[in-house]
Length: 248
Ligand SMILES: [Zn+2]
Image (cartoon, rainbow, N blue to C red):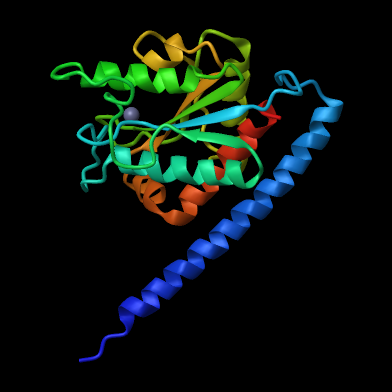
């Protein structure tokens, strides 16, 4: 029996992807111009105007480290990568330099080193290497993408952490929190949190650095949103619009 569904779905997926990409570009372009105009009248804490800022987008976990796992089997590492890629694309489409710490399902423990045996050290090397990638150039901004999970399913909402090592990190985190409340989650009253030593990268980063827990995998409604392409696009654009003012 002839079945033309796969072709239909492929075409539909291609169309949705194309339309999403165009929308991301147009909205991003509008935001960039808006921020450029805003920059001329306000004093955003940007770096030296002549130094191009590099955005380091870090999809948390990967490979054998799934991160948090939802009840339906959804893996944090996969959602992190999808959202990180969208954010990277929208930043790039708007002329920014972007470095993705990973674009595939992998950990980065052997990114710089080649030990014979990484047993028991993979996570340590992985985090150290992500920090190293982020810190390779001074004029960089680090954005880590993660998901939350809690034992009680009632909790939901995006949560932002910031590096304690500079003021820009605090301002960026505040900007993300504010924009998310305005555009995506009007009921989100979570305050931004200063990272302690349990968040290795933020604790050690000297560059502006924030880590975004995009939502709770333990909350059924939020999980459904986080898995949808539309919400991932909205989230990526919201994050883009809240961090772009810190680049140039
Ligand atoms: Zn995580």
